[in-house]
Image 1: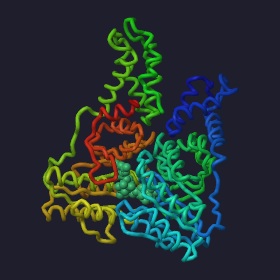
Image 2: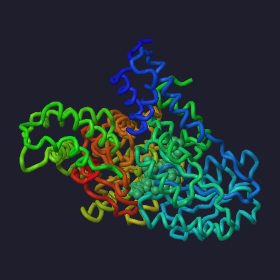
Image 3: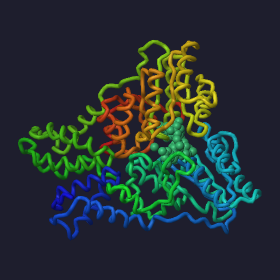
Image 4: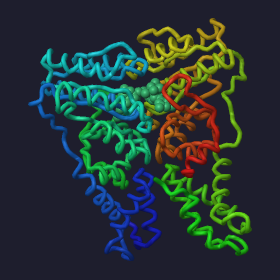
Length: 281
Length: 297
Ligand SMILES: Nc1nc2c(ncn2[C@@H]2O[C@H](COP(=O)(O)OP(=O)(O)OP(=O)(O)O)[C@@H](O)[C@H]2O)c(=O)[nH]1
Ligand SMILES: Nc1nc2c(ncn2[C@@H]2O[C@H](COP(=O)(O)OP(=O)(O)OP(=O)(O)O)[C@@H](O)[C@H]2O)c(=O)[nH]1
Ligand SMILES: [K+]
Ligand SMILES: [Mg+2]
Ligand SMILES: [Mg+2]
């Protein structure tokens, strides 16, 4: 409707829209710069500006919006799930196990969070919900040793996929990150390519710190795929744009609730549209 | 990783040494850097706006002194204003009510409510010699009630026995009654995580409040939260009237701007901070430390 001249003030307003979606100042500026290229000073409708913004964001996200494809030649295909505390690892594992078992695959879960109270019980409930066997030990057990045993159990029970849960940890805790690294080391002794897939969960409500979360977890655990959780709230998870630009890691899924079906493929267009404030289609 | 604000302001302002007072133009240039520093620290945009307005008022016309560089002077004004906004005085958990005093924990999913419930219970038991009962009203997350029970065993704090099939409001009533009959000083209600736009769950939260009549309602929020901090803090406050905030994961390396956002939009004090996963990793809130962190100092 209302046309506005694309001047400094208008650009600032749209940069603010992006900042409020957690893109961060630098990424927001980069995108509004691209918006102004060739258009500066021209009259342009607000809705049109938002559409162009969404397109610019989408360009960064399209290359990372990939479906999760598991190499089932590797049997069991080992998926390790890592991330900061409370970001949704265990729940995402439950949802993912549901998808895989529905597709006819046999799944074993490993309760690799041997630290947090009732982490094992929580995963066991997801095991029941999805008909997946859960390999677990008592609290305080060595997670890497447990992962090793779970691999053998998954072989023995003829599983297609083994999903290993881990305790949440902050990326700046060197000691805890070293423990995580040990899981990869021990697993690869058993099977050189394992873990085949390493998923990191990111909470959409997290701000700029998510960038450093990916940086460090990727280095330590060889993260090769991301899942963004809690997109059912009002947070837009815009830091993912900066992460995509920098790391180019596939984003396989988004979490949109606590239920078993609340895991959806990541769609670059929808995600970008929500950030730019386009009406939902 | 970040240039500290001091460096950035230095390059803009330090040439002014020897002039009379900071002009509107000098301050505007400096405030652009302040704005950016705050946004990089995850302070919510609307809070940044009000904040920089207040800094502008204090900085324009401020006398440039010989003894201190203009850049440092502005940093000090910003730092002081951060502390004023964050709340200068420490506000402890208020137990000044007839026993059993009910404390209710609320917040988004995974923010640290259950862990913080255990930590606060342990602290009140050990430091203030209170007889504390913890009750989990989380009938939704798998094994949530079990989690609190285990924390009770670890800390030696009593937990309300789990009765499968009861709803949150019913459990709140039972907890209050058990606390009264059992001669407890404090009963802490851990609730399920909820998204602030999940209407049925927000209604449920208000019902729990009506039933339990909590003296303290603590919003437990992740210090790594981004721009959404204003939305979530405002929504929870509007729906139940929080009495304080507990920030978690302050042991992370985030810049912690969410603290400023939540305090600014609710006016409610940050009472405690979580600095680890273990049950003793709970500390009093010191505004100067968060202010330093926000400024990358
Ligand atoms: N609204 C919403 N809640 C979610 C989503 N994913 C997970 N949760 C909730 O977030 C909370 C934490 O999830 P968990 O799966 O336990 O997270 P975690 O990373 O395993 O946590 P730790 O093991 O303690 O580090 C739970 O209450 C989940 O139900 C989501 O996509 N949307
Ligand atoms: N590093 C660190 N971890 C914390 C802190 N507080 C809580 N955690 C961790 O964060 C994760 C989630 O904590 P919970 O207490 O289960 O969170 P919650 O809010 O009860 O989660 P829901 O009930 O699912 O909404 C756990 O892994 C905790 O150990 C903290 O201050 N620092
Ligand atoms: K969180
Ligand atoms: Mg978990
Ligand atoms: Mg909980």
